[in-house]
Image (cartoon, rainbow, N blue to C red):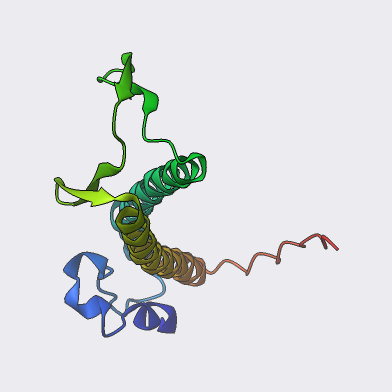
Length: 181
């Protein structure tokens, strides 16, 4: 049962939702108890670990979407600086994919979302500098969320290995991986 002990790390002890059901030594002749434990562990994997993995993955995808919007704004600002034009014609989304054409007389200053629903008026150079800082911060956040996804996936694999051991199943053969190069 060392697989289940390895699942518990110092960081995860703080998170009560990540703690697997308790294991008790049972008589090997009592198959009903082992089957109930297998069901409890399978429910733990499905109800806790997989849902947590889905939640973290959705958070990471939302951050990637924010990065995409900032990079799109950065490209637009760079094109405006290259053309040295202050007039801008664009389509504005009013909601529900309903667009109207708009013309900006002076695009030398723009409003940039800085977070928590607040916008700040900036010049192009300021906005580009802010976008670089913001995207690096968001990239660090996605790296952290990716590491958390990897830990949860490892915990799922560990639990599945423990279930195989508990049920007395032999290890599955390693999948052969194709060499790409």
